[in-house]
View: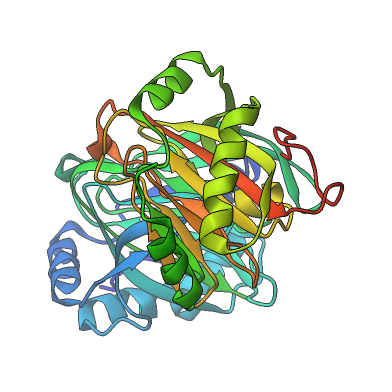
Length: 201
Length: 190
């Protein structure tokens, strides 16, 4: 049995969901891996070295890239396998060709403030976040999407449009573009563990 | 003002890689309390810049007295060019991008904390891209920072750990005394 069974994904339905999603393209897929494989992934996160990462936008613990724990490398390999890339390409309509993955731990007080993942020259096409811990393991930490109006390089207005709960074994795929502002709301208690990164052209 | 200005001036001259010094006791408690009571703020929110309340109310006599302190430390006459008062609570922040949109190339910045209490958080972080100069959130104190050489700032996100605390701070932009080269105090740049 593969780690991620992309054959279970209803790709036409997910593509419709992506296209209809507001404030920008995204889909939420629950049950990414079989429950009996999830514990091994959690152990992989525990084994992976994480380091404090602080900037104006964020404060959290993050792994290096590439990750080193075999269980986490298996997730990256599954997402980056031909079936995984084909599934993501079909849902998003974007020609994704490779994936990058890092592991993040948000303890109480950690956050990632609103930003777009769009960076000139990096060719990130689709972002993703995969949550590993049961929801009750932390408070806060929701992925929040913003509706925003741009005038050239300047943001003119921004409005919170959607909050996605970091449920365990849930993956969120979302669009990368200058207007796709999003944040991870502050974790106020407990611990939130995620694997996240981008699909590239 | 109880700070030892000659000592601060000496520290300023040798400060590197960012020319900056922390300055104790820039204002007295009564002045800070009156400002907290009287200033009127407006909310500001652009998700990718910041979330805070702002006032640009002029306070000429205070600005002049602060400019004199800054001039003594910097060893050159400095005049007030622009003032922004910020009020921040849990959930508030101001990113580098906000500084890039609001700072107008002034020579120096004087940060003054007017809060009623210390939070143990809520620092102002100055950076030249390689090094940082953190300004702790210390009531009545602040810092003088030279903003040449690509020095920018951000106001750290206030996490739940600050509880119900409110942080009040003044950012006073200063320029070498040469009338007419920069904006008037209180002029706002959003």
